[in-house]
Length: 151
Image (cartoon, rainbow, N blue to C red):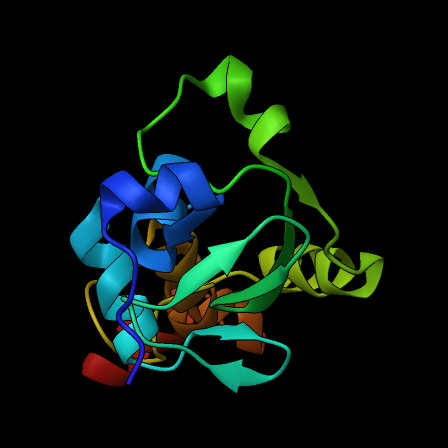
């Protein structure tokens, strides 16, 4: 049984843990979120789900599913220390398919990206739509019609 390299050895061999790399490359905000994404099968390499402890090398393509699209990144540097936002282009190359971005654009246009229908309070736009639906003038009635019925 071969032993996985530790973080000290990983820098010498050009490898890094995938959860640390996803955090260091600023794909996820925290390392624990990156590890959870790996555990929940949202991170794949070559179509195979990987564990948070999986060691990556330069040149590998990592797919990360963030609803509603799947991003793809080519590893340029396997790092484990977080870098500034200006240095991110040296760490990975975004190779996400253009169709994925079209899917993202369409979901934004249709609205309600992460909100299940019927959950939460209505937005201002929802409220206006409800008011327009309930408004009697939409159906061709005016206020006199309703007041004459009450008498």
